[in-house]
Image (cartoon, rainbow, N blue to C red; front, top):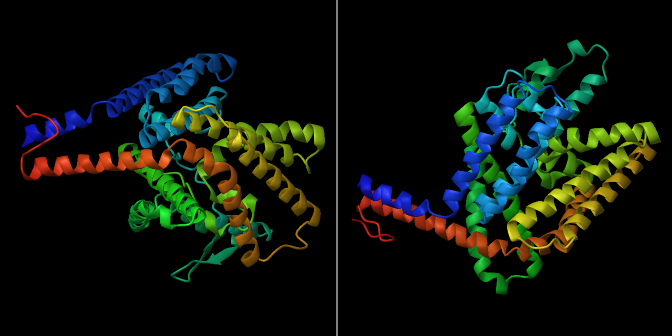
Length: 402
């Protein structure tokens, strides 16, 4: 039986999976070089030049992968996440600059959606606690009532407790979302009977659930191997009552956290010198959305190997402009008036969905994403079937067993 399992693994390890293993072996080797090179180079230009070949390598490696799941996730982790963290590391900033991290933790922190100890992001609910704390000068004695027990605890303790729970959600959360993806896959067989706009709504939830599950898998593996917590990815984005809340605190939080120190804060600093503190956030917001647009165009190029149409860039620039206008209006009215959440939330999500249908999903569909995903799900199912047959019956039909 062990021979049959070996044959199954050898058969399925050909092609993309072999390339995937080679890519990540090279990634670990290059990150090891970064880790040890930084021991001898101070932060600044010299360290940046030493890391530059690795940055270029991370842009090239995704071109060797062609599947939606292995290739797409690797492109995001390497070309975007790892490169931006390495840029911060080159100048002595970011999570990689902690001198106490081991090589294994360094490599995991560089590429995966995980956080080092003490860097837990603050959620929307926690921000309210922090604002409550600031309202009282005697903040040491400020307390809130803890959910469940009803016991009063210091605000700082409640924020820390909430942050510790923001990594991996319950297993049932991922099971339910996985089952919903299976349901969507079945519904796609009847797209000729479903309105096209409703099909795109299904695509929206499919992307959201798929991203959350894939990132959770990688984060869970990293936690199991090196004991680092998963970084929160989403905070119920469908509850957003403004674009600022959607993009800044609920949708793809990991990207927000990496864009803030690499793009937003540098642009904010120079804008403050030129425009003053009040309006400096506006060009910082636009700069962040422009960089996000370019990185999304790059990821879609890796997925489809097609010349960018510019629609993805237009989508993010549009949202950047609208978010900048939203921030300007909030500054002008200074909290004197605002839409109720029951009205603001549907308007926000409606705007995101309509603009995504107009500009984002057409590019997604031009990559043949759905049909390719179906093929990959079928291959995954065939792999599970082959393993099951080898374990149960000791047979494997895809290769000739000697």
